[in-house]
Length: 493
Image (cartoon, rainbow, N blue to C red):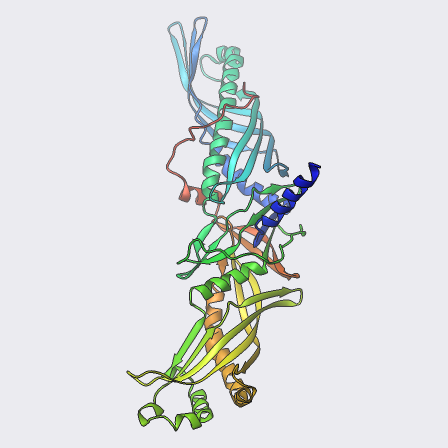
């Protein structure tokens, strides 16, 4: 009997779970590009390794190895792949590190010193980045696992005590190898939890789109890593800036991602676009008023002729008043996505009045307008852009069928007004686009938009417009080293 309550709780939890308005999938096709850029960054980070001085004595010999610097990283074999349980795993094998340091040797009263080049051979690094959702809904590197080792050191000793150095080389190089092992993992931990997180901080989470509306890209749960993909689910909803806690119930179809050919796939449900139009409606932006010279002269003459019977009955001070035309959405527009295309349905009121200066307005007519717009989505850089086109238009009166017949002559002029005067203003705004949640310096290229039933997907490849080093240096936090650096790798010990 205990199974039934558990099943009911599971169904209830599923019913209450918030559906994503936006999903992003990073496929294994992106890993080679990410690896190349990441290895350049890793090479620069390993060159910052600071190795403590190595000094001591063996019999009558006193030695001191100081000013050790890593000069270069040479990679022979490297692999980056997804590993389930939220990990991105990088494995470097058979690499080498160039070293440059100062040597000092004292044997009785004889002293020898100078600088020498060396190399750490057989460098193996295995590090994993665990990704999760932080309390603000941002993707973060929550943990870095690391295992690093150096199998051997090569040094070319010279000078007066070349033979002695060669005799002691095994002892000295063993000490340096141990110190080098101890330094690699703390550097990688800092690079992952501090520096890479500063890059992820550039991903927009809850930010303004313009002066009226913002967008929420909070993660709904931790990223899911499979053998071939990294999947992320975002809230993907707009909101009026004046109502920060405003929410819009998501009743749309959950977008699905099944493709894997491109580097990245982004899916948007109808809810994503509906929340945008709902937000602008709540902000009072979906209205337009034309007065006097703003009304096209041909339309002004036609409207005055249409309502001539009502106008001539007015007082002389009102008859020649400027004409006022007001269009206002009666409800939030709605988006419909089908495999054949995307449409926006709008229902608005059209109010025609005479607006005499310093006097109350005189209403001539109020009609209902229904329009259907086709919407073509494109992705440029990392901005989702929309181009709208008026496909269907009709006006009618909600008072009587007879009045609706009288409005037929206004059908074509008002449609022309929308196409010439209103649609360009709408497209100017929608073509600016909305940023997709990507880090700074990374853009989409070679985009392909595909419509489905209830959602659309955008497949694209990635392009690093800026290097990781450039973006991280720009956003680097003002800390020197993470205070929670884990112990060095087990291989070093």
